[in-house]
Length: 254
Image (cartoon, rainbow, N blue to C red; front, side):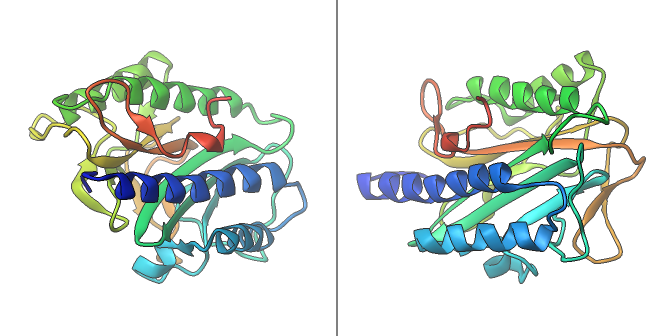
């Protein structure tokens, strides 16, 4: 989507606020002993209070309002009453929604409670890399160069990136052009970020795996070499300078 008028900017800001505040509230609400269906139900009520609808449910028929992934799961985890949260879990929540014809997406990994398994460094690295990547995006910048930045920073920290999961354009639907904003330098990708366009930029920083595959439930993504992955995502509008971050209220960077 390219924003061309004030009403579109207002619409994207409201959609971004809905998903950002829902993600923040879900992260704060999560407790050891809670199951992920309970956490998803909490997120559903919040999204409905904004008048928003679940983007993955609308678009793909996903069996939940939000995606909640735990530990070795990378993304697209199905909320379940059988999936319990425990102290020290690496938890990822991805919240995307449609509100009055506008779509926004954000996500974030965090350690639940005390960091008994040592995941916090991975989480912090993902957050830091996303912020650096977004700060380097403006109209005319090559998408491949931002991918190179993400992968280079991950390697410096001792990590890898998941190469077949990417950011994407967004705005009037969940996935729009550019269809891929990779976490690595794709030398065949000659596209550039365009001023006033809206994209969802996300990191997939990994301890071991470099590729994701779909698990037995046909939704949950797992790593080809195991390990753990931290993901963080913001929906932004590209400008000539610093991007406008529609989902900054999720407080990922605080």
